[in-house]
Image 1 (cartoon, rainbow, N blue to C red):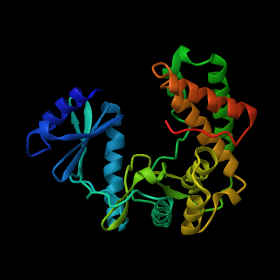
Image 2: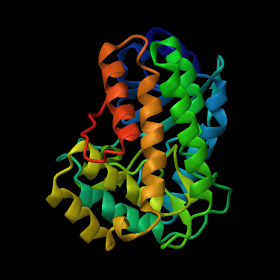
Image 3: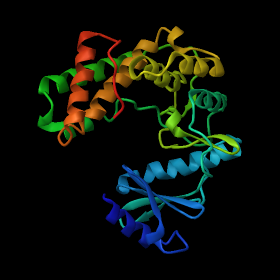
Length: 287
């Protein structure tokens, strides 16, 4: 789905009161995200995202009822418009500063204290996209590297299923990074609710541990995260398993861009080589 198609769907949806041509494109990925006035509209890539869009609205309402600072839905139902899922959200005020790890940690403490919602959340399927991403990579990557990642996926999926958690399982954000926090005039707000799951709370904490160990998050920033949350997941014996699973998924995610982007191919090769060598000190770069 390109921007032109997304704008056609936006116009057909009729969810904006004014001319849709004035809507500003904020992001284009699995969803095209448009802003207009006080509203944000998300146009899903295809009809397969409709169930997920409906669940996002359920999650937003549940978080609102629980008083969790999070993005709020402006319409109660997801629409299916010309084969695309469409949802409408209240636009957040302009950010007053970039979100920091400690902002994320404070929100995770709130989320992790919640009981289960009155609807079913899926488990955190961290490795579920690996096959699709490797298939999209095709011949651009070494078949031996693809086979290696599939083997890692299977091994870590089994190992993760056998873990004994330190924290009580329950609702998790699922993609707990500062980029999914918006700091407005009233404080930090959680955004991007599509990966909310019911699983080990440690899933949300391993993300920042990996940011520190692989992506260069400074020591003081990681310490602010653990001190605000109240625990460092690296003290848990299962940390290496969830970290390994996420590293595997991150490698495969980059692979899908390799056919059209030489920088993605180079980063993919860097990541796979570091995994093969067992070198946890090799720096990875966001892509």
